Length: 78
Image (cartoon, rainbow, N blue to C red; front, side):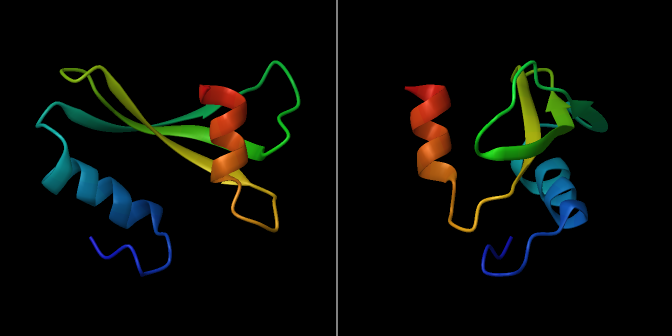
């Protein structure tokens, strides 16, 4: 996976399914809804799940001009 290339949902799903996660990874599409108005996120969707690892893979879109990862991390994971 070349992380210098532009994001491609199809390529990431293929990478997770065939190279990174276990054989239990199943591709899915489930739109997530928010009970509040997030400051940094515009939408989020589950794009797959690895049940043996108890792991869901999310695609999160943002509407920030800057990279929102630092603000997102501080807000939701501290």
